[in-house]
Image 1 (cartoon, helix red, strand yellow):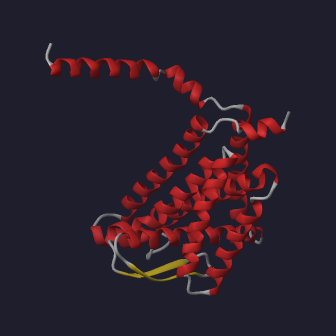
Image 2 (cartoon, rainbow, N blue to C red):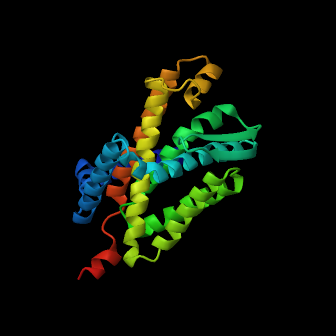
Image 3 (cartoon, one colour):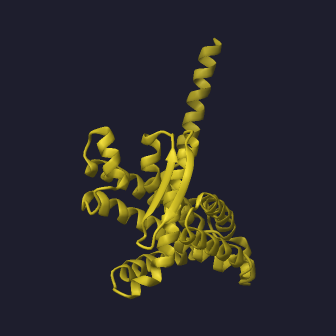
Length: 265
């Protein structure tokens, strides 16, 4: 028998084994939430409802202001990070009290930098939602978010940006010392839900509803000569995939935390 036939046979056997290993029952079992995961899903739902309600209630919406500004910081960090990765020199990152942000840079690839704000902050939000299913994962992701904020602080050129990034970075450090990291876990989860919703809302508001004529999607559409609504819908779809994927991956791979189970005995 020739080596080629042997290789083909081996590939067929491996493919057959993989097909048998991953069945519908396996997928169903992997995505079936445990008791602890059901609690996390309920918390995600409660966060979503609370954020949407506070978002639209005058005066009470000021409660969300600090978290909105942190989300804007992550949005601007994503622009800056994409710029650095494509050879840009970052001049400044600023945030204003109207929850707006601006990243100024020289150079870089516009086709990478412009979508990075929405999609980058959406990805970071989804990463925080994913980590909310496990304390250790939350600690790891909190370090990633802390590094993002410190980078934003390095580029910051106004006091509001500096204050917001320092306060939230300090909050992350402080929450590391809460019992079993539960405080850190649920704050990171809240920020994940907040960042994901804010990104989705921003995309809809700036493109589908066309509230802003100077949004990233509008500028991207001008460069590519396509509809800003088309760009917005595409980015919205990607952001939704990030969020849904984060929840499904969390259910599949981050089962009950052993440290929490041991402490409850």
